[in-house]
Length: 114
Length: 109
Image (cartoon, rainbow over all chains, first blue to last red; front, side, top):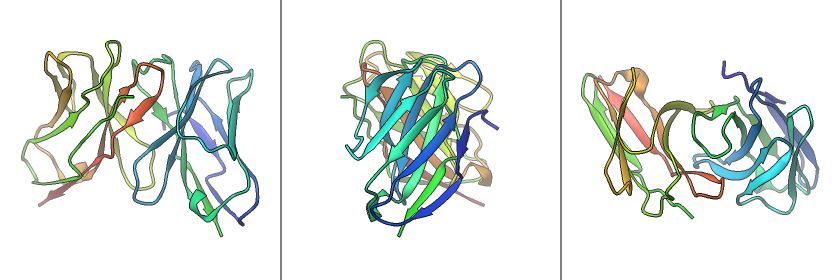
């Protein structure tokens, strides 16, 4: 158990819909990262937050948005869903925002868009 | 933007040492190099991290040459349970932690 909690574990929805994925980081970790992993693909960096502020942005689509709340949990919002958005979405947390130290990953939220 | 390159796949046999090399030509001065292991449908797990020279822990060693443009993960005496995808991760200096495409290691009996 990494200490990072992601909900929901599985989600099935239709094209055009909107979903919200939630992540609770490890206790004490201020930095949260979101990654997307499509079938048989690598991990694509989406976005990073540190203590409530956006710190780094990767290949995140405009239809996607994220935020980190004062209690440090984070949400990833995916809208106008397309078939290609079907993927595993991982959240990770860390103490150090620069990448020094370990990233602790959750078990992921598997999104299926039909 | 730091880009990493790893072999797509490797095969090994139980009890052998496995070395996986990652190229990261544009690594920034302050970036660390980290390796993760991932099993299907699970989140990646930390294996080892280094900045330069050699680092060893209870499961692996990490070799980083002086120019830091590559790194090699060494897994001693692999077992069937080491069959997984191994990712090299470097920061790009701007906070983006970019994973390589991963190396699928298959350990055979």
